Length: 355
Image 1 (cartoon, helix red, strand yellow):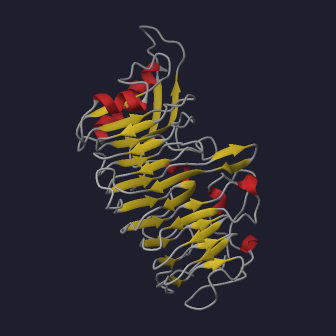
Image 2: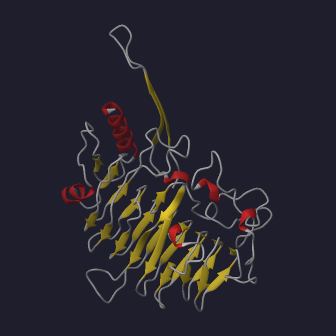
Image 3: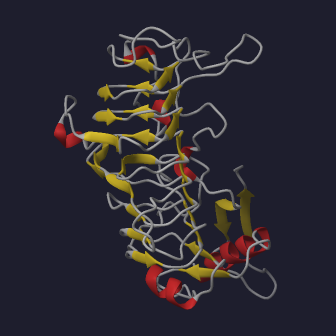
């Protein structure tokens, strides 16, 4: 197993040579990594460094971040999505606080297990993370929250230029008049234990915040937004309210978005998605089924260039299992016994996904 972790580290270093320094975070016995917790790694590394948080059954704990870092985990639902990672454990973390000094930080591929992120800095990217925690076969039983606040060093300026993309199982609070907020290709949900008719806030924003909300799925809960753009989204269940919004080419199970400007109302959601089933992952069930009314329903769609509503279309389509854009070992096999005359044979298969 130690040799396997070293192989992962070598490939990661080779693929990420454009970064500053790269460090391994691994709390598995015998891993011989640089650090065993996120906080210890943060406290020792420099601005611009990259932390590779490796697979483990044990959480790496929370983090209070005051540096610009790139933090990369292994993804999630790895046991449900074949050929994603050879080790199917995720990179589990606690709550993360992005404080003054962390501007420019990128967080991807982590499993927050219903914890979340508080943002107090500008220019943050939150990408391909899982925020939900399951109960039985319900993957979004509990939900984590991304909270966007004032910049920590200046209580008069809200955190601006935040990208939240390709994440699973989260809700979002935009507490102050932030601008440059991009929310795209996420599966947003209020906790399932509250029931399908809950009015809990899945996305709430300050009256003067401006957001671009595109190609998301809203599972349940209430959206409150003003003066923002909602395009190519699908509301499986929930509520929508606000003023001054540009709302076009969305689908909903009721009349939340209306039936003008390319919006579709009273859509039977059973006709939209492939749904849960044998061999279908928790996030794969949200793919569009054959003949789905969401196919070609997106803004600007043409016969020659169809654009769909939902998370698997648009400029940044959702990535199954939240795989980060670094090489991943998805197959590993070794001969258990060897000798000088018969060396141990090791077979690995590696792939890389796009941004």
